[in-house]
Image (cartoon, rainbow, N blue to C red; front, top):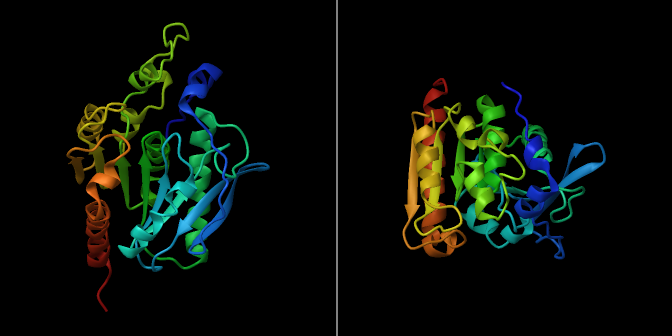
Length: 271
């Protein structure tokens, strides 16, 4: 696997518009398990695990920019009701997490978080398949995990994802010319998805103005997976996919996971 650099977008001018950390002020619901995931020395990342049955699919979820893991406390039970475990994780400085976020630490932490989750699932004998999912900014973390550990995941889910970094920075008001930032200096989402062959499901809002639908179309067209789907939610914008789609949102995620469960079941030797 090629080592990738993100130094150019670690600058304060970029970090201050990409990241909007928010601290946690709520106690976790009794149904969720909190984990402080060690990622680097004394730095740990906050998480909320909403758990279905051990044999059900698990979704490692990287949220959007202005969100924190606890924002999904009310959504987690919808996942578990549909037979999906939601493992929602934060970034540095978000929720109860330590440190300060940057592009480089975000990518480093995504890999460390995945390795922690894999060990934890094994130790708890949770045998269901593991998917990685990223929403909005979190699509960069999810793609980094899928790119780095493709053989250890069952599939990739992208919601409201961005394809190229420069259009995102321009939309956020970054002077890319003054900072001499080119696309090769960015998160490299297109480069990574060109290497991913595990099943991919891309979900995007029809009326997304922050990250227009063309982002999903680019990612879908560049994806190397033979099994890849693009689903567009009519009438939704960047932040209203769940509220517009309602229960159908969780149903389509479970349908995607069920396909992998069926494949896994068919591959098991018959007794």
